[in-house]
Image 1: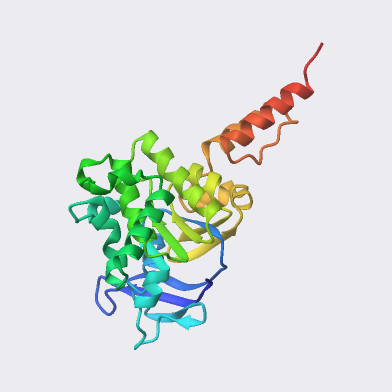
Image 2: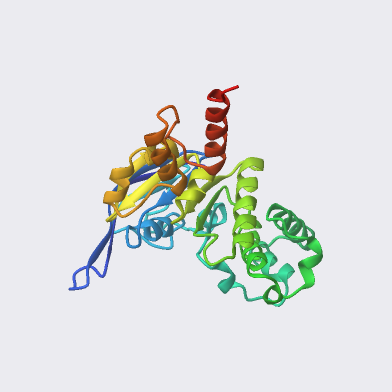
Length: 286
């Protein structure tokens, strides 16, 4: 499922003193099967952009075409698009409302008019995708841990079988264990399913490990677009827009000042470990 964004502009409170141009002439193509990281400081336009992708917001001008279907046309029916473009808001567990995990995850499929067997199948599949034991189905979601509640919320979106999954800060507020679990499930979901993922994040470490394309937003515009390694080479450009590179990248750059043979285009801890061991093996004195 492809997305083509053409000259997209969005203005909050147009025509009054509180007018703000949140998106400014955005042009962007997203291909099927990409794992995209969307980064930018608060107010850069990230959340506004993703809310356009399933019709929650209508553009002031411009168009969004998903699989040759213009979702910005005035009389368009968005139900089919919203089934295929799943949006998980920050702190999605706050949107849980049913008395059991089963009912919460099954809410969307039930509203699609599916029969009982198909609903149960989707619930089982989506719980498996996010690493939830099916035995939890009769528990209240509010009795679960924060990480489990978040997985229930994501499973509810996955039960709609979207082709595109958009996640807004999915690890926000979780403890380290819950954070690692939820990010691990997202990575597994991408690797094992034919799905496009757009991950909004403030964590440079997270996007460095997970995504294969990075889009940087600033003041409603796209400032950079490329692979994480390409983007994180541009440290000073990122710092100009209030961002940074992963801490391990700063560390490896400092290390290179002392040991010139060390590579400094490192963006993950695993890469750093491998590079340091390689250097030590190559410079061992008998």
